[in-house]
Amino acid sequence: MKYIFLFCVFCIAILLISFESSEFTYPDYFPKPVYNFSQNPLKKEVIQLGRRLFYDPILSADSSISCASCHSQYNAFAHVDHDLSHGIYDRIGKRNAPALMNLAWQKLFMWDGAINHLDMQALAPITHPNEMDNSLENVLSRLRNNSNYRHYFFSAFNDSAIKTEHVLKALSQFELTFISSNSKYDSVKKGLVSFTEKEQKGYEVFLQNCNACHTEPLFSSYSFSHNGLPLDSTLSDYGRVSISLQSSDSGYFKIPTLRNLRYSFPYMHDGRFKTLSKVIQHYTSGIDYSLHLPKELKKPIQLSSDQKVELISFLFTLNDSSFVFNKQYSYLK
Amino acid sequence: MPFLMFLFYPEELYSQGFTINIKPMYYGHIIQIDHPVIDSLQGEHVTFKECKFYMGKFTLYSKDTVLHFDRYHLIDIDNANTTVLSFPIPPSFYADSISFLLGIDSVTNISGIMDGDLDPLNGMYWAWNSGYINMKIEGITPKCQGRNNLFQFHIGGYQAPYQTAQKISFVLKKTQSIKIQMNVQNILEKVQLSKEYQIMSPGKKAKEMSESMSTMFSILQ
Image (cartoon, rainbow over all chains, first blue to last red; front, side, top):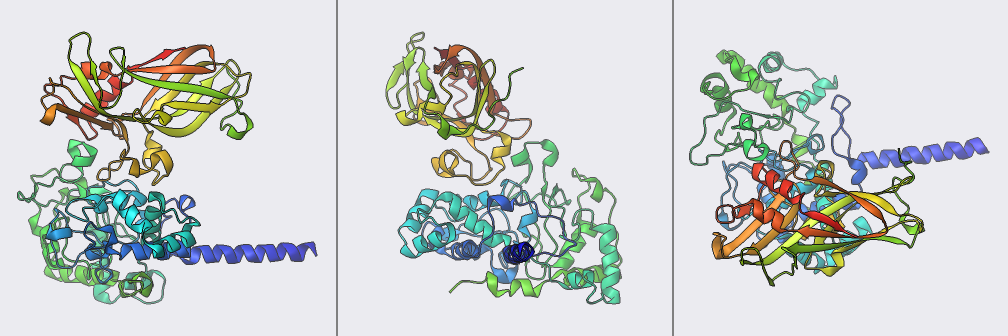
């Protein structure tokens, strides 16, 4: 009898664990996430609340734009076709809104790493004058005056008081579910399909020339580096140095992932390149070697025109259409 | 070697409290927000507009007991409820020394969103360069060359080499209550208000000011 009881407890525990993790699954070749889930355990109702907030213009001062305005799902949560993203009242910022995916593996956010935790990230666009130009007080008071939100917060947190902590944790939870791990590259990794010959050759070019910074399987080391881009004097954006205050970080920006490039153009922190071939052209013939470059870039990258084509065909195996069309991430009607 | 009796103290067990009364002063005068105080040495007056700061991780020591209280308190001298702190202690406990942190430690700074005194809603958090503001002091004085003679010092930063949280400790005569006097002139004497009247980001200047902040406390028993 005792054993039957223990067996039942075991089965229930397994069921609970699998339910918990069903919101957050990733392939075994991914590293362990860095996000501390014990402080914000995933829960269906919280994720759905985060999803509502993500798409709700209530967060911006004049209720005109939402998170999704600059992070649209069809663009892998980047801002389509804008070099510099624009926010409220058509005000233009100084950087390209980055694509959002695999956020649980990242410690620092924004191109300069100004934000030190996913939970704190949303505070920045909510309050920035060129983005949502709002105040936290105003956001909380609007949400508290909305009976639907009081209901959603209660079912998510058993608390209808609507606190900063819960707003930010809900946004984090929704964003944590943005896992892109279903590209052709992933299918190859899982042994389900093979690369074409061209893609395989491109993979080898990638491993030799790109992987040190855009490290697989996340296709970024998520550290900061200089990629040899000449300064745009109209922006005078020196990146990471403004946060770290270390002169060696001048011109350093967060290394972006190479997943879903097909959807997330234009490229670079200031969106200066519209196409991948322009990006590759930069790495092979556009780098300014007089700049303070990291060791990975000191040796010029030389690629034949065939290798460039092969590299692009490999990079296209990192596109994950099931991610950009996943209905769980879309606007909740 | 004191015996570490309670690391995280079960607060509900004792009704007895160790009380700390925080008294912000300027050249011996109690500071009240929006009330001018005179610098008796030079005859200048200063009107403080804001004085808020974090204290936390209080540890009370007696010969054989160490009581540690992990939480942070946001002290706002414009809100009398925040300037008296009370910590549960056993009736026979008399502290012979105390330590605390002025400002928020680096681990807490990178631990994500928190509620209560650490809620960014309190206006003590930098949204665009993640991190807590350990101390805000703002005021008006004629010698300050800023707009409307306003000085604004928002001191924070947790990353090396510009960490600004300061550990402060005092030896006490066995006691269950103390007054901590803050001699705010110690901060303003260190800067030339005619030239330096606003610091609002982490860095070298913030670090230097945090060091002078750590010298402004004295204990009255």
